Image 1 (cartoon, one colour):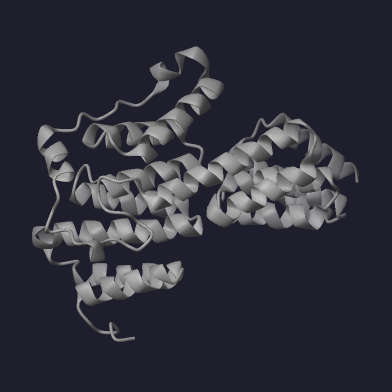
Image 2 (cartoon, helix red, strand yellow):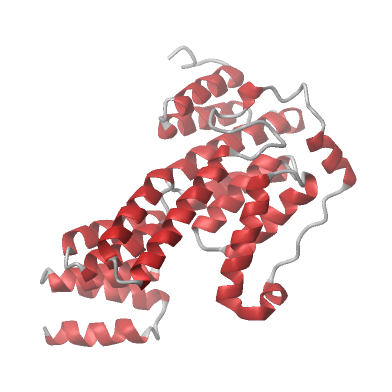
Amino acid sequence: MAAGGGSASALRRAGNEEFRRGQYGPAAQLYGRALELLEDAGEAAAEERSVLLANRAACHLKEGACRLCVADCCGALKLVPFSIKPLLRRAAAYEALESYQLAYVDYKTVLQIDCSIQAAHDGVNRMTKALQEKDGVNWREKLPPIPTVPISAQKRWNAPSAAAPATDAPPGSTSQGHPDQIAAGVERARTLKEEGNELVKKGNHKKAIEKYTESLKLNQECAAYTNRALCYLTLKQHKEAVQDCTAALRLDPKNIKAFYRRAQALKELKDYKSSIADINSLLKIEPKNTAALKLLQELKRA
C-alpha cells in the first residue's frame, strides 16, 4: 500500500479508503499507525490525533467492539473537548453496552453543542424510555452530572471549519452538525432489536430471530446476540445458542446472560464440563446469582 511508510495524513486517507470498502479492521490499523507517528508531536497535533481516534472509534463501533470505541472516544475528547463525532459514537457504544445513563449524558451534551442533530434527539428519547423502564419515575436522580458546554465550544462546532476537511472523517460519517450515519445505523439496529423483543413477549421466537439477525447486520450488539440465543434455546437450537453467546462474550467478556444461556445450551448438548465452567465464570462475577446456583446444582446431579 502506498501509505506503507508514509505520513500520518497519507495513512489517514488510506484508512478512510479501507473504511469506505467496509474493511474496518485494516482501517483501524492504519489509523493506529498514523497515531503512532504523531505520538511525540504534542499539542501541535492534538486536533489531528483527536480525528484519528474518532475515526478508529467508528471502526470499533462498526465491528461491535464497543469498549474499544469508548476508549478511543474518551481519548479524542481529552484532546479536543466537546467534539460532536466522538460524543455521538461514544453514546452509541454506551447504548450498545446498555450503559443508558452514560449514553443519555453524551446525547444531551451533543444537543448543547448543536440542537439540530436529530440522532442526538432520537438517542435522548430512547434513553429516557429505557431509563424509565429500568429505574422508574425517579430515574433522573440517578444520572451522572451533564457537563455544561462553554459558549466557545458551541460556536466552534456550529461554525464551518476550513481546518476540518471531509477527508478527516471516515466515509459513513457525515460532516459536523449533521446526524452521524453510524449513530443512525445503531438507532435502526436498536429499533429492530426492540421489535424482536416484542415478538418474544408474544411467543413468536422464529420471527424474533429474523429481527435480531437484521439488527446484528447493522450493529453487533451484545444484547441482540443474547436475546437471539434465548430464542434459539426456546426452539431447542442449542448449537446456534452457544454460537450467539460466544459472540456476545467476545464483545463483553463479563456478560451474565451470555454465560448463563451458553451454560443452559451446553447442558442440553450434554457438555456438562463446559456448562459448569460457564456457571463458575458467572458466579465469579455475581456470586449470589440464584438461577446460576440452581443450574449448578442440576449440573452436578447430571
